[in-house]
Image 1 (spheres, protein in one colour):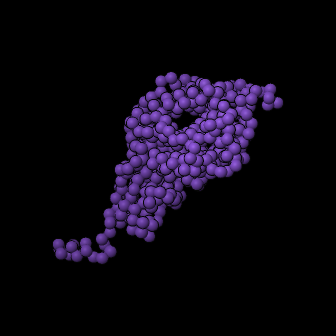
Image 2 (cartoon, rainbow, N blue to C red):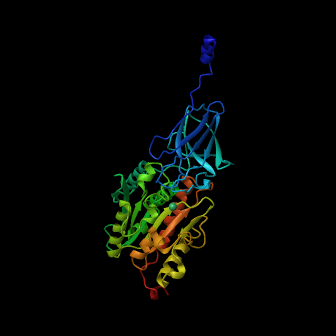
Image 3 (cartoon, protein in one colour):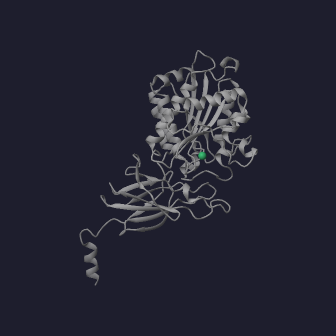
Length: 410
Ligand SMILES: [Zn+2]
């Protein structure tokens, strides 16, 4: 009997590597529910990281694949409460297609996920013995570092800087470039940042598209750099990104509800200080915070202030930014949206865009750009295109001086 068993185990073709799953790397998140080698199926969930916000981000490695075979990955949504008694709705964790890579660098998409009960099943053909799967193409601090260095190579005058050290002593990096040594002593000031919500990796990819356009030799980018200084931060909540956490609704505070006089996150305080400094120098004009929205939103849109409540000068500038972007950014909604889901004024004032609007000159425009992810364009290329189009929109916007008085615009 033992001999038979040994013989069977040694039979050619029967010795296949076992499927193994792990997420023990930066940004990784997975809870394995089950693995079936013979069926080539795995069932996983995003890991629940208590206190670290929405459990919707997942990113793991699977090893022991047989090349040429088709595998099924079922992702279930987290069923436990992520804070107090709140269970996150499954739609946040289950994109139309999952991101797939065979080297953790180039990302493709799986088949369109087959919906089940609080789950989706994605299929892919193994091109190599191991693969990485994720909610969307990951953008990690290492990706940010490479991007910033690439931008600096293209534009050697650009300055790389550390915005802050996070609560867990990680570095939040940024880049500053443009009319740094301008003959015009008051160049325009533009601040673009991404990833106040760690799971919204698409925001960083939009930022990448924007940055690579902004440092390029596109004549509109060259013209913009001659009259403006751009600050760009690819990842704000570095801690949650590294830990593979969702970040949104984190304890003690959501990153984008931390903008008051006593921020919890050092990077929020540092951004506030720099923005205030620029504003005091009369060198600040535009703030853009990059996000991914809810799962049902398949387009791109700006969140702005309630335009019924802004001054005529602000109305002119907000409308102008929207007009410059409409028709440029594919699938951009025609109108601003107002974050009506925010429960009261106190909370509304702690959102970064509101804070910037409340603490800077009247002409400053502060918006959030939400780029839909649950759509075929929810890829690196799709996001980067939105970023380039955002750059062109910004360059149009600054073809007029947003600081001019109302009388001058008539
Ligand atoms: Zn967000």
